[in-house]
Length: 254
Image: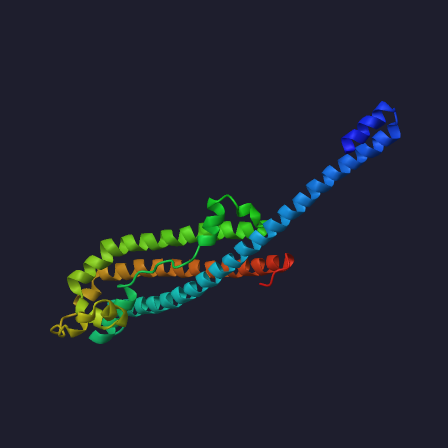
């Protein structure tokens, strides 16, 4: 219909009418594009809100697990310190105390229990740019790299444990007593609680240089991981703050 009016106006050389019809056509096209853009932006914000809520849930989960890990590392570091005092001859621990400290200090490996599923989905689908907060995106990327650094520390500690700590314990320690001193191990191996006590044995092996070196190596890894856990917790707090702010900015309740 508009095309017919333009054609008639051109035939009649009514250039004012032609200009008016042309403006109407252009305005209509621009309005259609604008409405389409608004609808697309609204859809993007709804999708962004869904991802933000999922990221917040991942953040809460990860922070809770990291707090538990931090508390466990404190127990481990304290056990290693007590064992090293025994190694130096500065403390005389009972067999029961030694078994508990061996279980908590050397017969334990940390793992990184965090949830990165939402971030991995955003990256894998190429939708990370949907999060319209460059600072938040940067924090998420930094956090992912920091998780990898922590995993590297854990892997290096595992190698040290596998090569040095485990052979030393298997050769010298009463592992039945170590299992009996920690509920976690007796839960995993219920029949270990029925193993009769081993005959009294000398703990002279604990004064050996190899034992002292193992304690120091493990303590160094525990200290490094503790620092990384503290940094990760701080990063998660910053991320949670940005997520809440972004949700409020798009009219969502954190």
